[in-house]
Image (cartoon, rainbow, N blue to C red; front, top):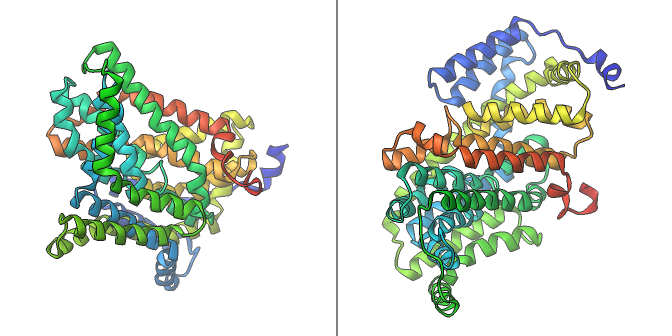
Amino acid sequence: MLWNQLQNQAVELGWDFYVPVMLFVVLVALAVPVWAAIGSAAVLLLVMSGALPLSLVGESLFSGIDKFALTAVPLFILTGDVLVRTGLSRKFLDVAEALTQFAKGGFGSATVLVCGMFAAISGSDAAGAAAVGRMTIDRLVESGYPRPYACALVAAGACTGILIPPSIAYIIIGLVLGISASTLFLAALIPGILILVSILITNIVMNRIYGWEGGGNMPMGEYFSQLGAALKSGWYAFIVPGIIFYGIFSGRLTPTEAGATAVMVTIIMGFVMGTLKLSDFPAMLLSSAKVNGVILPIIAFSTPLAEALAIMGVPQGFVYSVTSITENPAILIFLMICILIAAGCVMETTPNIVILAPILKPLADNIGMNEIQFCIMMITALGVGFITPPLGLNLFVVAGLTGESILKIAARAVPFVFFMLCVTLMIAYIPAISTTLLPDIYK
């Protein structure tokens, strides 16, 4: 039995573990930057436990970020920033609006679609929430939506930033667990689309109940005429996601190469259109560097922490503790989802990945869960945390754009959270959702 197999893996944790954990919690509660909280906890853990010599910390920090695949992170962030500055993101909105104008609640649906389109390029949810929110929230309010709901719709739609490939979150979890990012991108395609569809359906249902936005009943001739005009005016904007998807999924480009190509193509298009100037580069590069500067220190300082926890046997101890409660795989999967959602509510995705992935992965292995399915489930569950208090990042982004109360936005986001959770459970219990597109070797 699984219990007997794990009895010898029980780990007695003492103050050398609990004191650093408490320090980390206190520092995060005091709004200390996450990378500093992780670094402080890691150093204290090493000092108290002696798991690793402090002389190796510098080498460990460097090795944590000395990965070629991580180069893709700033490239995708920069691509999203260039996309906004060149005005190409508005072309996405024009096409999305033309696609959905035949239906009641069309602009709400267009908002969700353009979030998905932006996610397919930038890989960042916060960037998507900011870019799409600036273009759509006021128009949503003019269309009849309450402002808190309009903010919640954008915040929920922007969650696809880490769920639809290419995604920075999948690059990071791939590095942490030693899995190809390209494989994860392919596996995430169907789950990401399901999340997008769930948000679309939620908005359609809410709009039907409350009758916020009218529209619809457009003659088909007029519909195709306007759609054709929108595509003719903005077809070239889709060259960028086309390059990324074709390059990665055909195997011709690595994620890093696809990101570099997308940046260059977007910049060239900006110059050709006349919407990008050399004087825009300092601000553009600074903006992208700030976002990247939040991610990389977290990865760097998490590396010695993860190594120390592994040496102390914390992952094995966690597996032993959880399986001592129940050996039922269905219940264990549900417990993992609860842990991930709770973690996503109080901490950003990157630290959650680098801390929790090595701890939860052994549990997933022991219950026979496919490692690719585990990664998709983890990122999707963490994605729900972007629209849940107290640290729902997308809630803060749209609240900052509009001045609306975060609690009011969070209350309006409840239906989106419910349907996203339904998709998360489907991913967790139906392996085919994550593995259908993968070669047989990964199934």
